[in-house]
Each structure stands twice: as C-alpha cells, then as structure tokens.
Image (cartoon, rainbow, N blue to C red):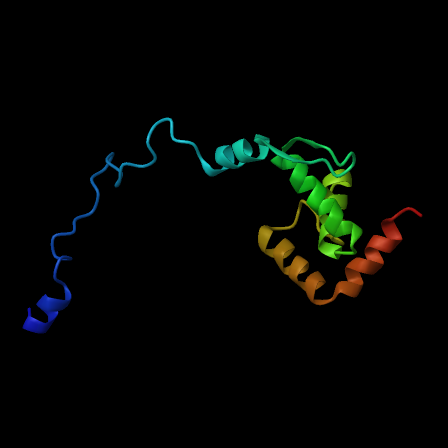
Length: 135
C-alpha cells in the first residue's frame, strides 16, 4: 500500500462487517418516545389564550389553535388552506382510473405494457372511463 493511500484510509482499515444477530448501534432506548408521541403531546397541551369567538381568556389546546389558524388562512382565500380543510372534513377525492382491457389472464409484463401505453395516450382511458361511468 502506498503512503498516500494509507493516509487516505486512516481509520477505515479496521472496519469489519456486523456479525449475524448483532445489529449495529444501540437503537432507540426502551421507553423513548417517537416523534408522533411528542407531536401529540404538544397538540394536547392547553395554554392560556384569547378565545376568538368570545374574546375572553381561557385555556386553548394547541390542536384547536392550529384548526383556528387553518380556518383563518382559508377565510383569507389561501387555496392550500382551503384544500387542507376540505380534505380533512370530506376526505380526499378518490381518483378513478379504469384500465381498459386489462384482464387476469394477462401476464404481469403484458399488463404493465398495456398500462404504460394508456399513460402515454390518456385519451384511451378518458374515453373508456366516460363510457363506463353509467351516466
């Protein structure tokens, strides 16, 4: 090994793969909370604030503050806030994609090729969806 290569690899020469059954690192300690738990605790916290409806001071949960802020933004015409509010209340619209002429008898390769052809030519799928809509 050249002197230059030894300098570059300093500290890496003693690295060995993990032994079977002994994964690397200690992992998360037992009882440690994950991000979702921390976030839920923060959302559940109640802090003093002014009720926007009664204008009186009371304890308001952070989740309520978040919902109020979303509503305020939507009220001002923020399209992303409107979309988020509607999605939370009504659910996201289902995307209906009827794939024409794909059958169980087709191989995976044939079905994939057919699917890719429909993506390239969306008029086929749109026409098929309109025909089968049942209006």
